[in-house]
Length: 202
Image 1 (cartoon, helix red, strand yellow):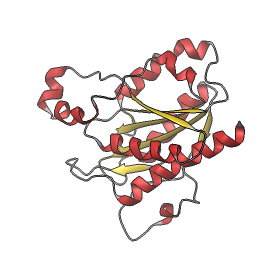
Image 2 (cartoon, rainbow, N blue to C red):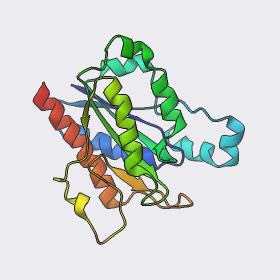
Image 3 (cartoon, rainbow, N blue to C red):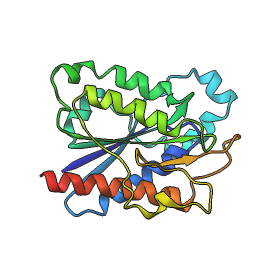
């Protein structure tokens, strides 16, 4: 049983979440996990200007996924920041290139799940994941979210991401806020949840 954690991250928030998701997957015996990233689409000059190039050095060792590779996995957990209430263009561009495996029905019946980040608490986290689900449904995937059995889902004494649709983190207006312990715990739980579902299906 193999799970892919596929992410895009500009400043590291989704990279941190991806690692916690992968740790959650690995906590279930018999389930393997790989972490891969989607290609960057912004020009190098802009990446340098807004500081993304420097941030992305932290995960430059992570391999870039090829669309056909998605068919090799039993479950895929996607992570991408929100851009105006929808997934970042880098992830959408990658998904737009999966027409070949869509035509073969290569992802039908596999588990799909999504986590995200946004600058503010109400900056489109839920709409991003729900919009993302549309793509997964077109591929015939079975959608897994973040159940309320994750107790951090009901935290009310701190600002935190997370919804029944998937784990999330708040980056802050300037990107300086890092994923909190509760948010990382949600990501771990989501990875574990997907791995448990996969184990039961197999």
